[in-house]
Image (cartoon, rainbow, N blue to C red; front, side, top):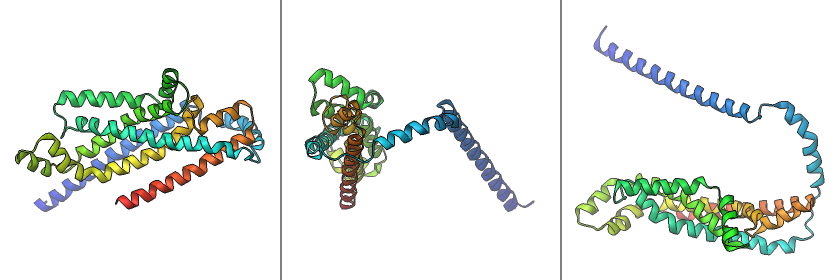
Length: 268
């Protein structure tokens, strides 16, 4: 067998091994997914059949939606929007410096990078609704605990995404700036940020869209906004008003998503 044929066989053998490895990995992932579905009862058709009548009754009680109190929802919806914007501002203000300390190409020392990454992991591991309960207990009811909960929880996620964007920046401008004697701040402002600002803007807008939806949930624990009206209607078992509030939230989410999509197009 010639050398070219041997090389061809070697390439085919490597490709087959890669295909087998990928197929094995996909099989493991699918098995894990099926195990999780079974463990959580998702594959129990009997439970779905038993719950279907109750679910149908609930939907029946939610129709038609009762919009008679829509004027009283305008202020809570405005508070929810304000919470989402303020929470995003707080998250960005804290995430950017932490991301620079967490990215390996801008961190001043590996120990600092590990410490900041651990802090980010801790912040994103605590759900915002738990933070909302804590801040409601600390500063009282209203939008402020919602802003603090959204902002601090999002620091963990936004800081991680920012750090990954910074980490994947082209290293050549950084090396050139350092070789020219630029300070750390100059390297960041002239070699790092110009490369990653579009990615950071995308991350920020997506997070703002998420914050609006999360703000509605935080109102349930007393953090103000439309969620407070929602939980009040649920406690009164006024399901027609519940469905109306949910539709109002849906309409606002669609508007916020549209604004976010427009901003992303303009920033490209």
